[in-house]
Length: 395
Image (cartoon, rainbow, N blue to C red; front, side, top):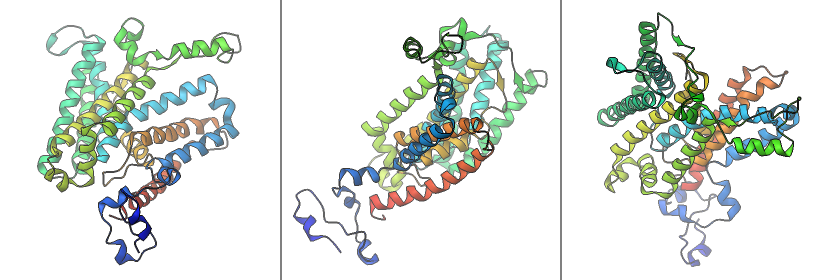
């Protein structure tokens, strides 16, 4: 039953108790979400709360069983490298999921983009336009992948087909096209190796494949912590992909939480018909988000190519599933309208730490990573739906 005391509080709408009868609970309205709650209750209702608690427990566990390996300078660099890779594509996947869609072609897009850049860097620009620089290779590849993202988005919004089917189709199309192009232009091989180390001579390549936060590790060396057995500086800095992950996450957070576009994204995923009725450009929002996932996949691929000076048709395999899993663990749900960028950050950190750390623990088989991923994903899906119902009153 409704709590009569709440009706006397200015600015607070009456709301049915969670213990009310089913008939009473059906009387809830969307405005019931505005009920004032304590700070603790508010935090417990946040989409990312499960990921925060899970990450805290994981950090404590790793400190107990492998702290000397996981938390030394090299361990931190390796962990953040994996976390950043996953975080870049998971951010794009999360925003798309909040809008009620998801993209299974992210992993194939990574392989396709890496192939495109590597082929231009090795054999030059198309149509005999001369040698390619890292900037031109990246720019042309980005234009191509954004166009593919635009095509995917248009097919989804104009045909009414499920994004699952459309992006699954492009998963196969892009992966097959990547392998065909590699074999056609690379003497039958699906790998390109031995590219020049562009990050040593080109500033743009260094921005994608070099190191960042070197000042921090110089400072840690000065403090006497970042020192190897010979007394030299152990780690020079973090991989550049960490800076890209931070930048993309900050921009995505600002857009989602502080702009009208963010409201449109939530509205599109929450109730498409209501969003259309209120003038939200639903089609443009969804198409733009498919292009954003393509952008994230291209950045992921560029960081790999300029870091390792190689490309492989198999790159990005199953990364789309890991990105979706990280978004779900971070609080997103497949039905849309729910999730945060902060949650994705914690979700990526959980999976990145486990993926790297299991190999440091001798009594744990590395394949348990996938067991962990599936278990956490299932638990998170139940938890997210429960939190969503508590926030909306079952609406």
